[in-house]
Each structure stands twice: as structure tokens, then as C-alpha cells.
Amino acid sequence: NEWAKDTQEDIQTFGIAGRIWEASYLLQRYLTFTSSDQFDPPCSDLFGGNKNTIIELGAGVGLVGIHLAQQLQQHNTQSSHVVLTDLHNVLPLLARNAAKAGVYGNNVKVEPLPWGSESDAKAILTTARDESRPVTHILCSDLVYFPELLPPLMRTLIQITAEAPNAKVIISYKIRSLPKEEPFWRTFGAWFDFSPVLIAERKADSTNDQQQSWRLFGAKKSDMYAPSHALANLKDEDAEDDVFIFVATRRPETLSCTPVSNDARLMEG
Image 1 (cartoon, rainbow, N blue to C red):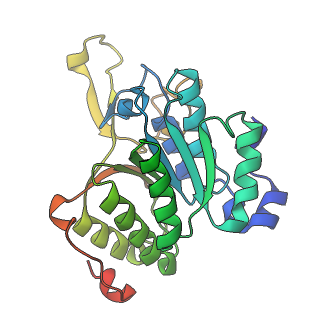
Image 2: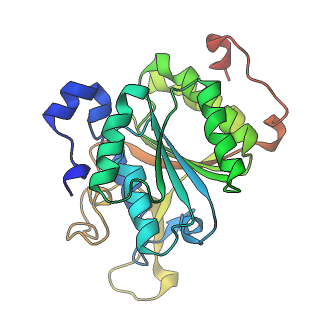
């Protein structure tokens, strides 16, 4: 899959948006339709055949959203639409990769959504509502890093879930500088209930489901590989980096709240 690789040319042209970041691979595996992985919480509701809208924020190369679109096509759930979003100048990269993957124009749309842009978010929400295709999932793959981008990212998440209060926010996250990233999680926790994804690990000498244990998904190096990969089920060493997936839903008591206009105050939680 040529589209699923980052190149030096794309990085030079599109900057950090042209690079595939580490936590994307973990989210790609989580969003794979398979019976070999058992997750808590599962993502099986994505493949239920309903007319849903799944929005990926800061999609960049499009690895996660395009992969999900392919999974939806392969398992006859094309009634759902995936909306890949990013800055205006990144849209040609997304459109190119979606076309190479064979999903562009089918169940995949490419739309501008700079974080914090109320008008762009409203346009996507309006289209979803007009098509009777509610927003059910918001994908965020390795977006929590630059402190100056965290307030607008938070505002976009709040805006979308104000219109789609039952939508699940699925975030893959690699810790890079926790002191800089902690304000986002403090604020996120004030607006959303969230928990980490766990994966079932069956004991090697047992076929009994009662003998399996649960651990954090992302804690092992092999978690980064697709389920079909030879390394995916190895009992390997711990991952070198702290990488997680969190699944979140909006706190009902915040739905009547409006975020403050001051970014510093917003990030105080």
C-alpha cells in the first residue's frame, strides 16, 4: 500500500502532516475488523451497518481514516461515511491517498477543519444532519503534542460533541512531554469521561476464556502490528514508549456549558 507510507517528499511538502506518527499504528490495529483481538471497550459498533459519520481530525497522511474506510468497505458497512479533515493545504495529500487506496468518492470525504474553526465544523455537522447520518465517532491520532494547538483542538471536540453528544472520541496518544500535555488531559477530563483501551491476553497453556487476562493496549511492542502480522501475537518485551488509546464520551452535565473564550482559562480545566 503505497498510500500508507510517508515519504521525504511529502514531509517536505506538507510538513508534519506528511509524516505518519507512531500512535497511528496502534489506532490502525484497534480499528481493524477481526475476531483475533478482544478489546475493552471494543470498536465493534463501527461495523454495525448503520448510517454513521466518522470524523478524523488532523488526518495528515490519512493512515487511520483510510484504513477504517477500507475496513468498512470490506465488511459491507459502506453506509457509513468517513470524513478526513485537516488544514486546507493538507487536503490534496488526503485526497491523493484516499484515491490511491480506492476509497475516495465512495464512503470517504475530504474536508477542511482547522481546529477551532466553528464554521468548518458546523459545515460538516450540517451535512451529516442533512444526510441523516449522525456523527458517531471522532478519531484523533497522535494529535496531543504542541501546547499552542491544544486549546483549539479542545474547542473543536467540544463543538462537535455539543451537536453529537453520544459520539465516541477515540484518541491514540504517545507521551512526549507530559508536563506540556497534562493541561489538555485535565481539561479533557472535565468535559469528557474517558478510559484506556485494554486488550485480552490469553494464557499460552489455555483455551478457556476464563483464563485470559487484560492489559493496557500499547504496552507491548507487538501491539503496533496488524493482527495478521507474524509479530502481532508474540509474547515480547514491553514497548519502549508510553502509547495509549482512550475512548471518551461527553459528560452529560457539560452539555449546557459554553467554553470560556480565553485559552489559558479553558486549559485550567
